[in-house]
Image (cartoon, rainbow, N blue to C red; front, side, top):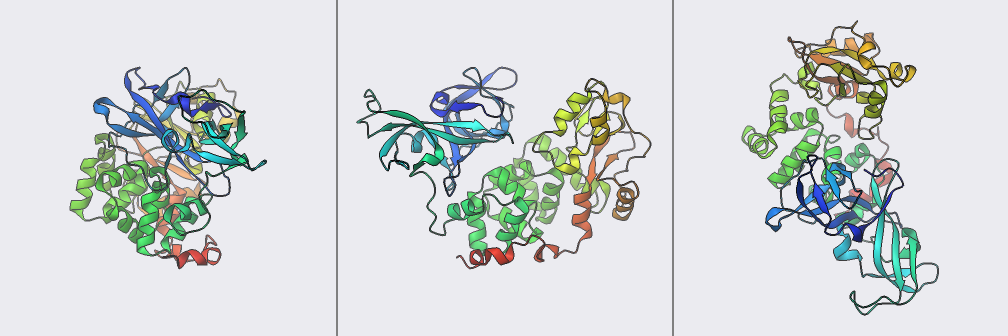
Length: 429
């Protein structure tokens, strides 16, 4: 992947081949999907429309793109073959933005969009930041361009961004674009069921997964029940495994089984394993996606894993050293290396020489009170869960413990401070 600050003109991506990690071509780029925002904020790039065998067009999220260099797109290889369907909050760059007539703010002149460029931010997300325009309106794309051509900041033109008036779901989403998932969840909780469903339908999969994790169980069940089953299965795959398993456990058994059958086999197997544990035990509370390294990995590698933006703070507080395989259930669990220890050691040091194995890990049947005592006694934000054969199954984090210790209605309180400032949203129908 190009580093932060790298810029890619989107017209150059049209028709570019997409490859999996093994070098096999899986399709070609046909468009780029973005989400427009209010107040001249640069649009966020959600992903690529890729045409695969059979001329089927699918959606490839930017989180599954590893490189956009050398005239090719490399992906993680995890492709969802469900046919791409554009949502109300989404805009196709090649189909809808190019050739559009917009207004240059500085001069109030009309210009025609020839291309737009996206750039990777420091958070490793992509957004549209430049617009390549031509003065006046060309007669057609095949005609030689005439008139002055300029590369402008996104904020230097008008005619793209969402209108600030109106109560449609897309406008509502743009209004709350900067909210954390927990705060957006609090807003959605106070919407009508109809509006809540509209907003959920317009959110992209990653955002909706993050918001669902923060909603009360009743709202989760209501929203997931109104989604198409294939999309519901995709959302569950995107959620943290422990949260997805909790949601599945709240659904009727037949509905949960249908969704499990629609999920990728490996993801479904993971869900079934989590569902086999009692809810208030280490196995029922754990997430199955900790940072796992082999003993011959270096401190530099460990810190690179910790720095990944999508890793939650509690999971980034330590790495777990295990024999291969590195996916849970892992090989033999050797111990833990805490983040502060990594910062104190030279980058070339092997993590196997730093493991802390003084504390016994938690068995999966450890009840909630003992987990709480364990974390409090040793001042930990996470604890490893290991089976009787010394395989690392996952990790219990302090936020998961708090979710189960707080009263069921704790989200109704004013903890997020949103209710007073969004009263106008509550009444929007």
